[in-house]
Image 1 (tube, rainbow, N blue to C red):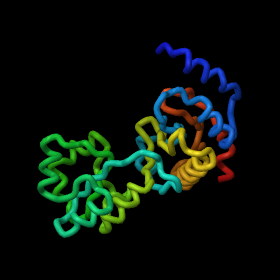
Image 2: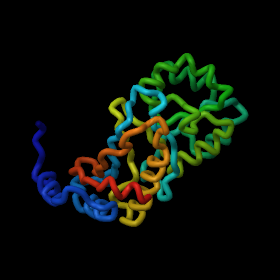
Image 3: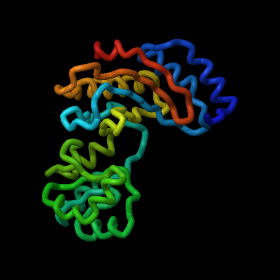
Image 4: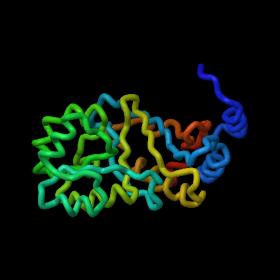
Length: 231
């Protein structure tokens, strides 16, 4: 077991209840942040899905009303006539063959990739590289689109993707500790509502099993699952 420092232990001691309401958890989240920098606020959620079943996958996107506080680095795989619009929208890199070749040589210094349907076949050369880092554009996440500049702008302004991992869990950032409590709560409720709406129809049992909030280096705060049903 890893050893925790004095600040963490003091913060964890403040988490005294078995579960909190969303409002209570947000307030406690800010109170128990231990890092000296502006920590990210994270949602950690476990589900009852079978991640091996394709029809039980949970994956979608949502625009958070107050953004995440994180500056996303977005690249766009587009034709030459769409490069300028994507750059103007905030893409750090945009292009086709030259950008693909750059990635093939090891460039992966970005957080998300957008592509037009026409460029997708050309990404076969770098599909393994992008796939291993979770950067492959996908229609399900809205990153394969005929409107790449619009997609770049939305991602830069707070659009996030959520998806289950191999264990059926979902982990997402929904803001920074420096955000106002009301803004964090609005972001969190927006994200949770979208996750609940994405419940797979093939799932017959319990969808959400546990919900925890945490900050970078901070303790986990349990949230009552029953509150999610009223979102």
